[in-house]
Length: 378
Image 1: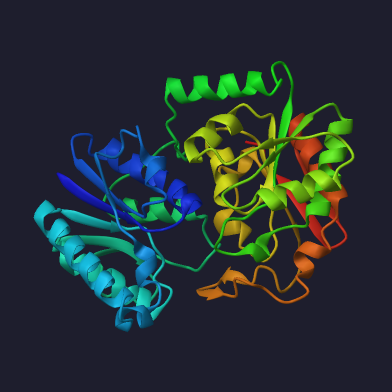
Image 2: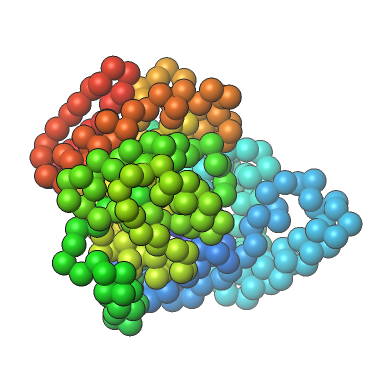
């Protein structure tokens, strides 16, 4: 195989979970020309990654709702973008298309069927859940969380004969980016100190995934009492949320402002620990090797928990209704139920104890009431 198209039109964390599959393709076909089709805002995560030769950026969001295709303004723009993408894909003459997406809805399956047809590749590999009749090679889709998203991606490329013996999510930072993070670290007066990064945000897809600022504030105070410096991470538009956490704390804290994804990743790499919600920033921290305590509520921890799970912890309430977002073979409700008990009843003490255990690198399994936290050691 000489020309391979990998499709991952998704958010930041989703693209990071696809990088082990990209590495599997590169390991199996070292001289192949591998192209990644991704969203414009996530493309920067593939910079300097030698598993990818070319990146095609496509505004997937304009096709999320089929009603937009008949909109007087968005419709013609979407049609033009689709035609241009089709011409680009056909001209590349791909040998294989690798779809790293669940075919959850009929509209989604229709879109990816059209994309595969436009590429006109003899091989189309993907996940099959009953909507993938256009796939020539398929891995079984048993539903969200039956396999981690990293493992689903590896299952898909395995249908082509590709494998990755040591799967890790990848983000390749340059020496200059790491040096810039070192300079910022010094400017903030953090040299020689252990820092815990708290991220109370969750990106723009679902703000319902956010634990309370008061909860994060209590965690920050407890870890500050243990001798750690506390840094609050603010993604785009999350500055007010970060300030709410700072106001909830008695201990002093610093603010890691939004400075771009790669610069943020370089900063997180220097942190001793990361505590945050299910988000792309959480996956950034895990990717650069920072131990993660991930707070999960309505979203599916078995699908999108920090990877690899042996190096991190997930804290959640073990409720019959959780997860309600991406559960089984359905999308579920990204807003959850109005009470959001899965998050409002989650105690700071459980998160703090999970953080302390992870800092101590001890093997543990803890059940507190309806709450569970775990760490698996290899």
